[in-house]
Amino acid sequence: MYLIDTNVWLERLLDQERSEEVGTFLNTIPSNQLFITDFAFHSIALILTRLNQPDGLRKFIQDIFTQGAVSLLHSNPSNIEPILKIIQNFELDFDDAYQYALAEHHNLILVSFDHHFDRTTRGKKTPAQVVESLEPDDTPPEAKTEEPPSPADN
Image (cartoon, rainbow, N blue to C red; front, side):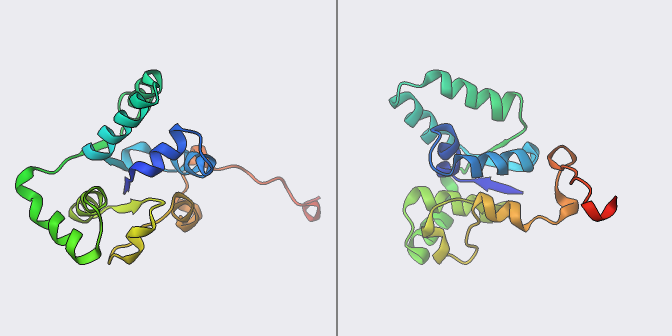
């Protein structure tokens, strides 16, 4: 199961350079295996509203929560100590440490384009790395395509 970092969602929502990579990932992994933190969700809402894209925010909510089964994670203020230790141990900023702490607490693979996570114990995977790491039998049926027969089969 996977915790999706803010930058991955934004890559797709804003149709940036690696949008197709994110799209392939989202089409390959069932949404009930995906998680987003409240921090990431609110950051995305802030960015989309600042860009005057309220319809984009509505569609995002519809896609991941209403039609999809993405789970929203949060941390209580009383759980600040693990986040502060992560900041100190790995020299992450607060938002990265928050993502990392929740991924660690829930034993989730962190999916991100952020290289800061490379210096952590758990690291991160990019969407493409997750898709590449799946065994052929792990691919959901709707994502599988049949290969055409080879000329030798005729």
